[in-house]
Length: 176
Image (cartoon, rainbow, N blue to C red):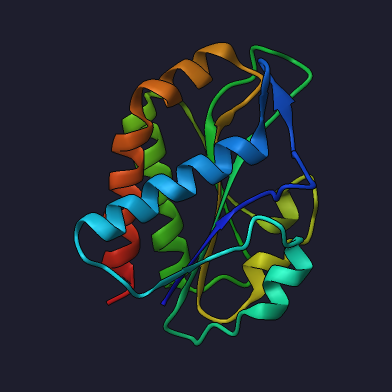
């Protein structure tokens, strides 16, 4: 099973930049991935409810060790020239979680033509601890690009469908 989450919900916009809300972008990309799943007939996934907080979402799921939890976010900075993409894993991530995260990072870099800010652990993040990364199974949280960087967003807008296709392929491959 793949648990696919838009990093923010209807009552939490997340970061705001260039006239856009992170919640809208995360839901859009999640839905594009779901469209790819449907296109190829893949049905072994669950998405979050856009009205649920993260704690509500996490209470509703019980991933097994073979499942995937994938959370989509967009980064932000006070500096509008901050750029790039990164993927986060648990401080105690398995080798397979790290491989999944590395594949997602490579997809972000290749499809969006962005610099890699690296594969990082949750303790290297601004939050320090990320509950979504500490459920059973494989887990990764992507910071697709900077919502506060116009060029990053332009690359995302031009390539979001291709990115969703890559995500779907990677997630299905690791769900085997």
